[in-house]
Amino acid sequence: MSKVTYYTEQGLANLKAELHQLKTVERPSISAQIGEARDKGYLSENAEYDAAKEAQGMLEMRIAKLEERASNARLVDESQLDNEKVLILSTVRILNQNMNKEVTYTLVAENEADLKAGKLSVESPFGKGLLGKKVGDIGEIAVPTGILKLEILEITR
Image (cartoon, rainbow, N blue to C red; front, top):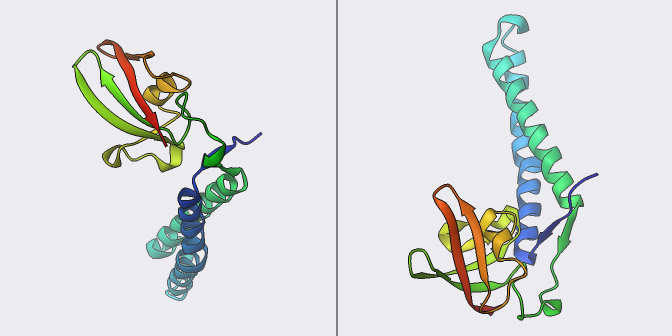
């Protein structure tokens, strides 16, 4: 059974755009490369042909993976989420009690995570440690150096 993944509208649009790019641009390009390599002669000793066939196999695996992901994708209805506890799409201001430092993250689906942009996956240890918490709660996350204590200061959308 496949895993359902949740997306924002933008995240699902990005997934579909990547899939479209792979099918309409990359796939024909690799087919053309295989055709050119095939025209160069004996296939068992043709490195270009082997490389193009390998690239085609990798591309087809990527397409299959994205198609499966798209078929199991569900849009998150932001209007149905409450700000009382940390959920997917929550923007959370937290205090790292170990370092006495405040940071803000938005919890997103695993495929939309981008730490530099402040988007943290709900599947990550930090995301799992914050999910379901309310303002004032402390999430404890096991890290290699011990237990990290994160206090929830504010939850917004």
